[in-house]
Length: 625
Image (cartoon, rainbow, N blue to C red; front, top):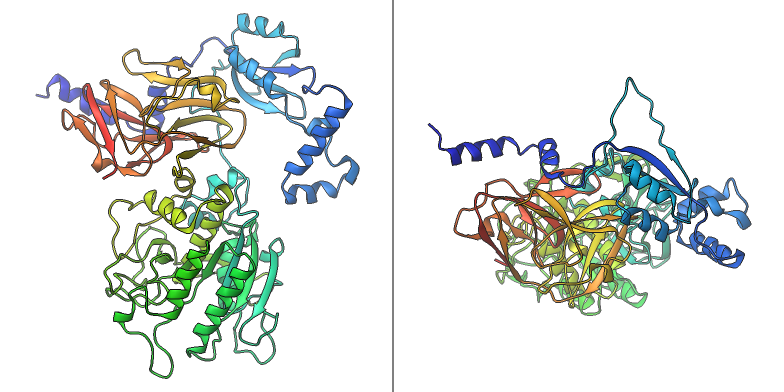
């Protein structure tokens, strides 16, 4: 017969489904006997016509280019946006949230918010001087239904990406790119140089791509597309790699850095494989350096030439091959270089140059199930360093092809995985323009899925781009907040109070869960090792100066606890408890603010909050392995 304690454990395991978790974790923020109402405001907080005009002008500057193009079809330039397009005044929204009402939606056009609140609370809200009217939210359905306020985690009912990714969603999800796009991070203002065979620049996937300069290092002119007399299909490889990084073809393809600007270098002559191409590569890199490139993608690699000369494995030491040395020199000048690890198979040391460079991101290829492809080249380098650095989708990777201006397809090889990582680097630089190449590499590897157990097949594994932008550097950290409820934790070593000093636009304050009372409570202090629910009015990145934690010790009560992590990814198997074995296996969950689901995790990441179940009162110690 099972003991009482064992029966409790078995029962808890049965409750680990996400739906039941949502019920289990939603306690004191749920109000009964409430309905949803619209609260409309009298104005949008502007004092006079001049302030309103300034707000309209500022709003236009904040709009994405694609939105402006759409508005220009139906409005004149002088009236591109109107009063109705401006968001509700934030101070009014905060006042409603601070009153105790639960805010569900905001309306720009109708200048109001929908809320759940009791009748008594609605009477109080009606007395606010800025409230114009309160009316019920109309529901259509069969029979009567009791509406309840949404607890943390139930702010939205359905999440739909605002970009129509099509099949490219899978390859972007693998490295966690879509949340950055939701935050408006698309590589804008970052200059990326592509070094490849040529490019079908007329392809529809590149209609929105800004090309700053182009040069053909084979024919010494500015024509980088295929010309008469070129080797057949000369521009196909470059078209595929460039599109994987930045292409836009709604319904099929979005590259991670679809907002970046570009230098296009044609360096690879398909008709031969001779050492002159290495010189083209180096010349192109110096050209990119002179024009201010911040990221270079080279889906090319060199080892043996057609004349039977080339590099031996002993030369792959990071200091011998010319393009390897040039790649390191580019990094010294602040350029992030991403390159293919090679397609030479699964034997140890099957890399190609310049993947052996110690400051270059060498990228291997995985398939849709995250498993390494057999053709993907392996490390180590000749001097024993782990390579590749990272991996990304290199099998069935969605891309554009050069057969026509609207041809689409898919391709495989580390040539396709490298531009996905290069695009991710552009996203990081948009958020952190001051980061050096080595700091970008550190952020990517410290938050990747094999961060603590790298190997010569996967390197440090699949990166987590959202985790990478949250990685603390230079005594500062960045957290991502999405409209609605978020579960956050700062990788801090000292408390921060008041929380409003760093999160001034939060609605209703911070909520932490008390496992003894089985309810949430309001707090204004952020403590190391603790996680919090926070309601935010919009999508936002917040960077703050703070003391960063390399380790934390958290006191846990029996039951569910909200915890935070430290500066880097720490896997579950590295958690320590006193007494030992105090955590229920498989009980680490985070809350996804976009899908509104609790998701099972195997590691903590900086900036995110997590749930964990303690079998008994204990101390949890999390530190860098």
